[in-house]
Length: 569
Image 1 (tube, one colour):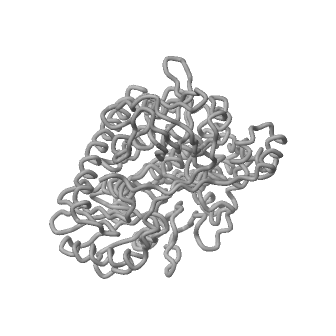
Image 2 (image 1 turned 120 degrees about the vertical axis):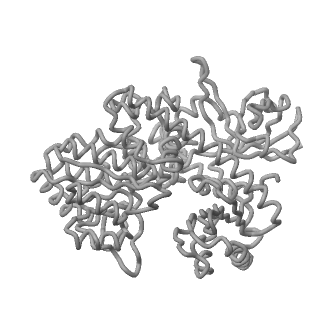
């Protein structure tokens, strides 16, 4: 089934304002226009955005409860009390756990850690593991990226003399508020006036680390932990504006020169040998870290980042690399099966597909892939012994959690937000779930809502395209959520030859304009995405793309990465 055709929304710019900012900053008008469009419309704002610095990080004491938490942790350090760091199993939680453990080592604290098994224990804090930790002598627990809704477990901890400090960034329960913790550090909790609400879980852990090191007179050591904070922030798909931009920008600087043996080994396994960008974290490092929690036990990530020999680090990094390859294979298999089922089920506005024994660690990735391909809200369910566990992804402005709430009686458990959700229900209720969700989508979504849009930052002439332009645009890095890599549109191009097929699924396009300028473009998954299009020699096209530098055997050249194309024959 061919992908859904996209609507192009091309940003318009004030050329006079762009020219003025370009003159003030010494940048090209195109770069200035992008800065203005992203809210950096004065010289002062633009220069602050382009030059992230450590002094752009907010004072950690602005976080509610952080001072109380610091006093309790320092008391534990002074008394030799054992501390348990309890992290979530995703990249945000595992990197945050390693970060806090590193800071506790600097302070001379005795600590251990626990990352729950995704399949055996599930998400969040649980009583059996708390009880086991208490028996091992842990009197203080610090959570990372979890705990804000752990009412039952935290009530048990309080009743049994264990203090729990929550560090989290998820939303608290609107009715119940915060659980009974000793301290709650969460920029999104009611009553917290922290100026930046978009911190990742590892970002919140970093702020606690910053406060602890300040208390110990070692705040200069905080910068060493920015590398791990940056990786977790990018890989957890957080907004890269505000404080996150400073964390990531500073953390990615000279990342390849890190002294952390685990990071060195992981970069080697992921073939990251040049300067690191958010792209390398998002598509090479992050997936290998996340594969641990999806396919096995995420404790391996903390063990990797704490490895004391390069031999040990290489062994763990190799295992994570293997897990990621396994994840890719299983994800591809499940996605193909689910897509086939979705197509066979017909033109539903809400796609619900299920399969017996599908790997629960990849169903969310499969749902995301199908939602992107069909541009329909999608739920993928794995069934086993009459129980279905599912993961959903939305499209456009469709509020997924609201849709699930319309059939709440069908679920044993469900939760999430507008764009993504998880659920558990008896398998025999899946047909009714599918019927009701499709009915909800029919009543909520118009045909126009189901046309995917591509946001194009600027229409650019072929004369503007150059490696120098790409190098200047790199000043806008790190790219990601909230600061996407600019997408451009260029018309007046034609195919010099028929595209070359790469690895049976990608396409390489050889382009030129009427004045003889030549360009090369790569279209990832282009074989599938170009279905029903005529891409013959001489075909005229308008291209939507990002521009990048392709380095091969020491030579650099401009490469366009296709986002979409329109035929103009």
